[in-house]
Figure (cartoon, rainbow, N blue to C red):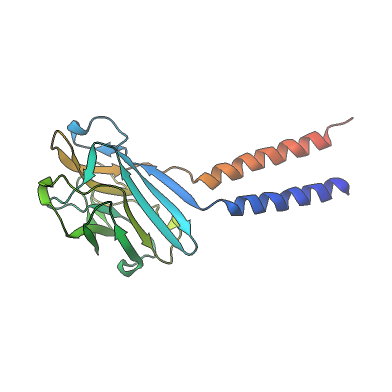
Amino acid sequence: MKLHSTLRAAAAALALAVSAFPAAAQYVFNATDVAAFGPAPYGTVTLTQDGSDVDFQIDLRVDLNFLTTGGHNVFSFNGIGVVAGDVTNIHDASTQTFSVVVPGTNPPFGSFDFGIVCATGCSPGGSAGGYPDPLTFTVLNASVADFVDLSSGGTLGQAFFAADVLQAGTGATGAVGVTTAVPEPETYALMLAGLGMMGFMARRRRPA
C-alpha cells in the first residue's frame, strides 16, 4: 500500500513538472542549393506554445540576413487548421513591416501554405543588406504540432520551413530550408521521467 501511495505521489509530481514545460520545438535550417553559403546550419526556427497561440522566432547564422527576391518569400511555412488572419504581430530587428500571402513559395523547396513578405522598407536584391534577424510573429489559436507539415513540389526536396536570405560579404542569395523535424523538449523530459520511474519501481520490487 505504501508503495502504491508513493507511486501515485511520484506520478502526480511528474505530471506537474511536465506541465511546467512550455510546448516548444526548435528546427535547424539544414538545406540549400547555394554553394556559397557553405555547410549547415544556417539558422533556427523556434516555436513556443503561448497559451492558445504559438510564437515563432527565426534566427539566422551571423553572416545571413532575410531578403526579398523574385519568386521567394522572406519566410514560408505550413499550418494545419491555420488561416492567414491568425498570423499576427510580425516584426524583424529593424523597421521593415510584413504581411502574409497565400500560398507561400520558396524555390527550390516548393509551395507552402503561407508566406511572409516584406511590405514597407524593403530592399529587393539586398541593395541595403537585407533585413536583420530575428523575425518573430504569433499564430493565434494554434498548437506547436500544427506546423509539422511539409511543402510540395520542391526540386531540392520538401521542407517544413524556408527563408530567403542574403549572405554578407559574398552577396550570394537564395533559400535555406528545414527538411528534418526534431523532437520537442518535453518529449525528452517525458522519456527521461519514464525511464526514471521504471528504475524506481524496479528498485522497490527487488528482493531483500
